[in-house]
Image (cartoon, protein in one colour):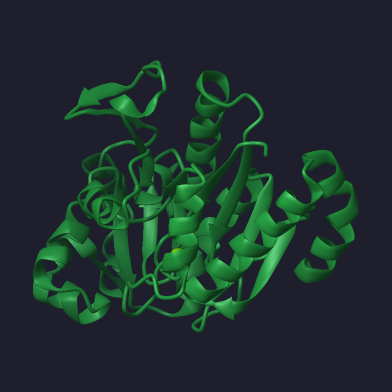
Length: 293
Ligand SMILES: [Mg+2]
């Protein structure tokens, strides 16, 4: 079989939005890993959070943090040192964004009119973060350890949020809506990070690697659109994101990790059955188009 690489969002996709558990995705994840298929988290979570999660989930490859602002690659994983990457504790760290201090400095220029409409995650007490996220205190502190993005709990209206996003964009920053928080970045993004990593995987390890991306929210759109196969996982909380004109889109019937398991199994069943990427594409396009409609 052609080598595949799965790039996956975590909260609401591989992990349950409320419990942060794998649930029925656990056995499917184990099966995928046993087949030697890399599963690469692409998440709004921090380095501190994802490094621990990778240990618990037995993921030993790269991961993308803070909505694509930085990429961490274990030095022993097989990639050559990417140009421009820093060496840090057994990893190559490639930063696509700018520092949180830089982002905060620019946002200060927005003036006081917005300050009552959000709480910055990094300014909240860990107890407040626990209340919002359901995390325990050590986990909440790891969630607050942000370096390349500013994460906001939005308190204003949905209309205000759109106006705010426009004002932030005029500062040269990006705003993305996650399942729980609003994230402000200065460069990078889930899709940009995935493309960067996939190019390195193709050039150093597997020239014809197929990319499969899975996500459940608006901040996964870039990621889904950048991949060869997009798995949109339904959420119990919001409408699924709608990748623009993706020819190979699978929209899960199930929600959260159950939808991840369903979608990944379905995509691999088809790939295995067809034993060829080209045939898979031509025969399945209608099926995917119908799902995405
Ligand atoms: Mg999510």
